[in-house]
Amino acid sequence: MSAGLKTIISLSFILAIGFLLVILSCALFHQYLPLLVVATYVLAPLPNWICGRCSNPDDFGDGGGANAVMDFGKFCTGFLVVMGIALPGVLAHSEIIRIPAMMMSVIGGLLIYGTIISFGMFFQEEQEF
Amino acid sequence: MSEERLWKFRKPEWMNSSMARSAGVYGAGALFALAFFVMLDASVWSHSALNGSDPPIHIKFIDWLPLIFSSLGMLIINSIEKTRLSADSFSYSGSGVAWKARVVLFLGFASLAGGMAGGVTVLVLKYVVPAAVFPTLYMGVANVMANALVMLSSVVLWISQNMEDEYAYNLAL
Image 1 (cartoon, chains in turn purple, orange):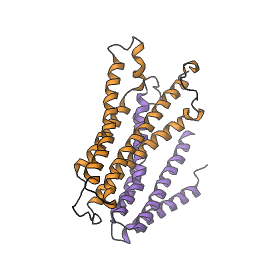
Image 2 (image 1 turned 180 degrees about the vertical axis):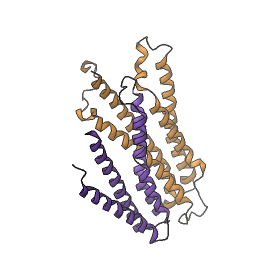
Image 3 (image 1 turned 180 degrees about the horizontal axis):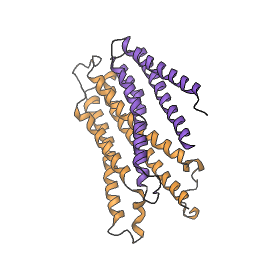
């Protein structure tokens, strides 16, 4: 099986490192706004999931009504992923947080999001069989 | 279908795959987020301690207005069912659906172009005419940049939605 024990362990390690980086970027400089990155990346897969449930992929002849819902979900996901990178950038540009804090929170957020995405892919493969 | 082609160059094959379509939709969302955050960055910067413009220039609601109009135009353009646009030659879609669709689409494009023009207007009237120098001038440039990004995002979304039509057609056959 592709989603073996080793995969789960390494994914959880990566998730822990991501959280460590984000929390460190907040706690080192006593400015807790970069924690919003975690919330953004946790919310990012949600629109895809919700819209995938709402649309029925079987009715293709409906003038693309089902596809429009799916596209809206993808649009929102793209928005949220870029938001996770742009939010520390905005904060750093106004010197609310420092540049190292920005880099740490961006890298940590990307690690968290990558973990969530690869976990979802493993689960989908498991559901197919 | 190939005899009705207008352009000499044909569309490359990879553009019709569903993966390219979803990549286009994701990219449109990313571009829209970039536009919103460029504007938000200018706004946050304007109210931070870094903004040392001598006659103080701040981002107000006026500066957000072009972006609001652009986003409204994008929403209108991409909510329209594209297949209704060419329905005029057939009589089964009665009561002038294509005509209505074209009017609404025109409103959407007018709103998008109006947003772009409004961005340039804000840049000129608020920043160039009082001769603002660069760290202050950035707020006006960001306004134009945000509107251009919304326009680009709208184009990307339009193209990928047109791809979707071809894809559905191929699947139905």
